[in-house]
Image (cartoon, rainbow, N blue to C red; front, side):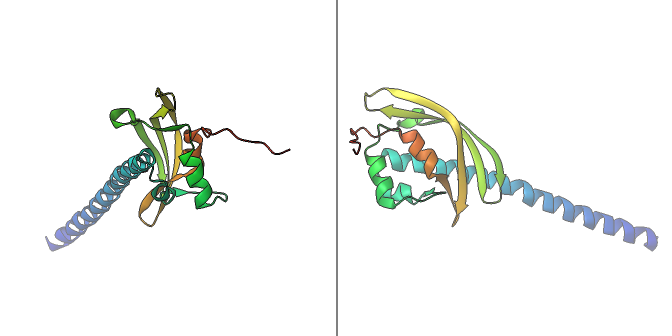
Length: 154
């Protein structure tokens, strides 16, 4: 009888360990999903409220770009996120690989004319210091051209 109990006990322990590991793995992506959604929406709120320094800190840049240039460009942009339910719709979190994620969303943008445009597109995010940051290029692309007239050099 003892020879039968030992393999059974080992099998039960092995299954418990595997199931426990699977549960830990299953909860991790959902925690990331909630955090990605929250951090994405926070970035849009910072932009809407004109808090460009804090928005800069919630973006990452692949190339170069100074904080001052980013702030100036955002302050002079022709669009900003809409309010309330129009701001963010249809958020879909795609592939999450370690510290990078791809997100698709429909973003409502108020134009200088007062009308709201909608833009559905993909966004790239990176996790740095526990915060999911949006690509600066994606934010600048959404912001549109500056409302100011540009003067070209001769």
